[in-house]
Length: 183
Image 1 (cartoon, rainbow, N blue to C red):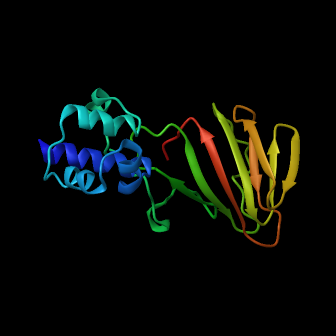
Image 2 (image 1 turned 45 degrees about the vertical axis):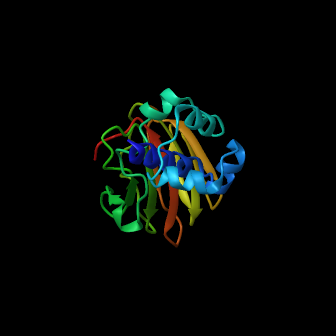
């Protein structure tokens, strides 16, 4: 039991970004006592645990019921981003393996001359993005504009739209769209 309490307390403290020394100072418990609790060598009394949790702050009930372990992958290296693009266009999807994903968050790369196709596309949802480098021509309905680095867009995706790199260099942008689509 002491090991479970200690492990949960350490995980919670780390999750909140609080050092052992800071938490000990906040709750009035010695650093060595807190260290022993987290190592599972000492089991705290209910009143001591409440005193520690009040400094976080968290209730004793929440402490024992809170899910401290993420069920989904949280961090991704560059090679873990799935390329879901078509043709010359590269769409690197962040979180593609998450079963409960509700949005598409992507790093998009359009080589010079690449586009999303001759036909305009439309689907339910919203999309937003920011150009990182290069230029991209975006047509949304009857409106067309060329965006460069630092410029952004946001539109309802039920309006027919198309992306096309009219520049001499590759265009990279970050985009987010709802709802999540499977590719």
